[in-house]
Amino acid sequence: MLLRLGAIVSLALQHIDAISPSAIALNKPAASVQAASTDNGGLVTEGVATLDGLSLDAIAEGRSAEALISTSIPKTNWVATADSYQPDFPPSNAPLPHTLTIDMGQIYLINSIAYIPRQDGQSNGNVGEHQILLSADNSTWSMPAFGTYQDSNSTKTTIFEASYARYVRLIALSEAGNRGPWTSCASFNVFETNTPAPATGEGEWSPTMDFPLVPVSAAIDYSSGNVLVWSSWAASTFAGSLGKNTLTATYNIATRIVSQRNISNTDHDMFCEGLSLDAKGRVIATGEYNTWAYTGLKLTLAGGNDAAKTSIYDPETNAWTAEGQMNIPRGYQSVSYVLQAISS
Image 1 (tube, one colour):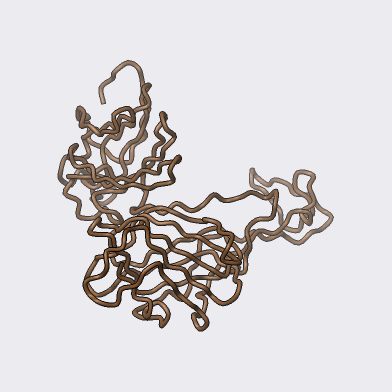
Image 2 (cartoon, helix red, strand yellow; image 1 turned 30 degrees about the horizontal axis):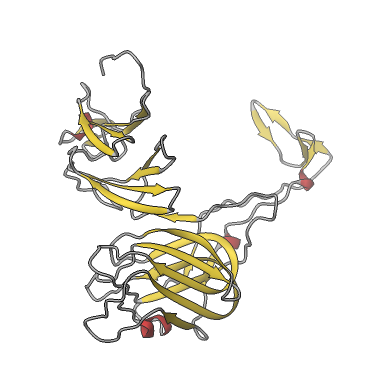
């Protein structure tokens, strides 16, 4: 296991100063003796006291975006430990999984972490499949997030429901590129927030699932309940596609494992395709966006042939197959399954 503990404790290479999750501030209008009314079909609430018979003063204010901003916790009193440590090269071949545990010295209300892989041009030890655990006493642990990170040197940020914790543990279950039983880390950051989780009875978030790609499209496997997602030819971009493949990932609800797969046998980049299910529960992806371009206000075919392609995923065989092409190439379209075939 290759783990640069000195870099973790000393803020080596880089760190993130703040994370600003998207949020909407809900504010109550000033109350008066009037009631909400409509004006030419629009809702008028200025200077009103009630809405649909409910006093506006009884409606709790929502959490503001400013309150949700996370700030990096200083590492002054941190103690970082790992299940194994090898300062020399080559690293020892201690088997996976590997753990990194941070003792922050006191309890914080935290809602995110940032794992920074090695930045020396090497990829050995990049964390792939992982779990993130929290504890207030180093005895009882919860798991607010899990999943699989992309095999790259970019910062991996995981945001989760806020929780009070002193200890943060990253468990590396796999090496992202399957190069060996190693785990490496250039820097690790933890972020605190002022906004706690919703109170009892106000809802609850499930653990965060980290995907190794941007999940542009998603479908449910009817036979298992697993979630299938995909991006484009690359994990986080669609530009420059050659229309030869699609990166996919699957969340297994039984094992909580996020696996990844490159679909190339259909020769189809399924970015922003039309999506539907047939009567057998198969996933039907038709067309795509990358071969289209705007000429003025007109959308025209810019090249390639993915916009006419059809790919089908069969949950029973866990396989993608290429099917017949559409008569009219397209992308971003809506799709409805019908029993009787019609011309496209």
